[in-house]
Length: 264
Image (tube, rainbow, N blue to C red):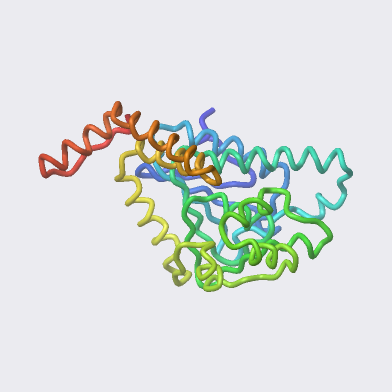
């Protein structure tokens, strides 16, 4: 059964005009992330990455909470074996989103706590409503992040500010997140999804294969030395010239018309 025809227990998925919207859907527990969420995330994001009709993915939650993070009543019962199994499944879900070969946009309203914040960090672009609150709050319940924040947060902001967020577990508002460079834009809550859709529509008009290669190069070069990064970029840039999208884009520019990209 296609992911489009399947009814998921913890996530909602819609696809329209080359744009997929994935929504956390556990409102009774503030969209907390448990093993079922992780299993469904792996399936959904893997399928979206392979769907040639999908060009952009939006990840969102509710108006009052994006995701409260790990499902603590379940997690608190774990021993080492169960914790490691959860961590492995959680990382598989994170990897399916982080390695998505298409642009991803986080549309964040309300609380993005712990694992919720980590899901925001996994997205390429991040738009927050004015009511957004973000925290890597795990230290407050005796643990620390297990879904990539100890790595990705440090890569997004300064080391000392990342440690401040991780050590104290405090909440920052949307404007502070913008000033730190954690998000791209802050908008009024009623404008959140329309803004995310507008960005997604703009991205959907770009050459899909070129965007895929560009994202791969940026991700591969994150933290690489300059010589390695330049080599990766040169190899990928040269390879782009074998794609139909690159030929179409340059030809359309020369012919002074709008390009028609196919993703090939």
